[in-house]
Length: 388
Image 1: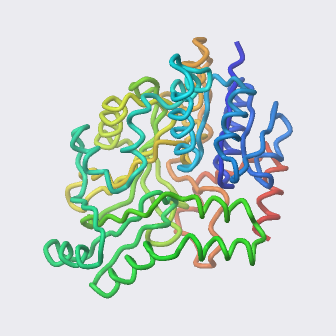
Image 2: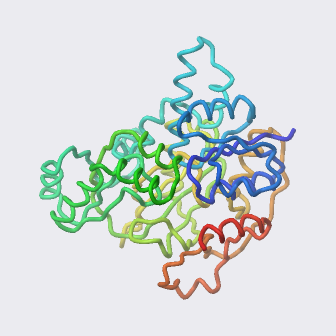
């Protein structure tokens, strides 16, 4: 059996292309639903590519799923997950029996009743209570007055977050009331209209403009700041069971709240157990990423964010129990797969593409594994052209 995987991405990050390469390497047929200029389109082995339209996003997803008849849908960004959830609900109003599209979505994501909670940063506390994991104290705030009352009671520093944002966007670490008020106003203001006009006027990108305007209403939460090391546990799971996982610590990041650019692979039972509990409590399938802070002095893993989708380490093959793509391939096909050799035995990994802010990188990076997709020169060329 050759499983069919549909990579779905409404943004243009590189993780979709890296996952396409990884699934191809384990013997899957790969198709993609993406924007017209997405770098994944450079990959010559794709069996089919479907255009994502921000004007009719549900029609785009429905048509791609119906045509591909995938064994697995891989959502690579939060908006893709939200659209899959909306499509699942819409399909349910049109038929008493589950439709083929619904079946494909639920098989790929797991229990659909979980996603209303998992996609909102402001509901992290409720998720933690249900799954029994440790999280910093978090509260939803609807006004600057509410925010100031919380901060006077809990103190500084604190973290302000906007729902339905990713990659470090919509997150601010604040140290005083003035900074907190500024961050709150920026998050709830006319951000979507202003950013949409920018994309139209300067980038000439109608796709991004439409998606920004269609974004859901803004909800802001405030979270107690936990000093420590940023870390992540990425897992492949199926019907509430974790199949494989990779735990990493951030050695370098793109800014205080940005994505990790240099990673250290670690063994951390606390993070892995928290991931297992959430996956089991909500019956999840596919890829999920869990962001933590490893508390100073104690090392306790505090969960700070859940990403019920593919993240930037999912494509890595790091040996037994750490090969997420191979684990999913085995589960969806029901066929054994010869264990793959790890791409590296080094614990330090430099994420591709590397940071280019001119500030340099930590000294140990010289001995790190640089995760460059050498097997896909056309992809490297596409990224170089975009960054040039």
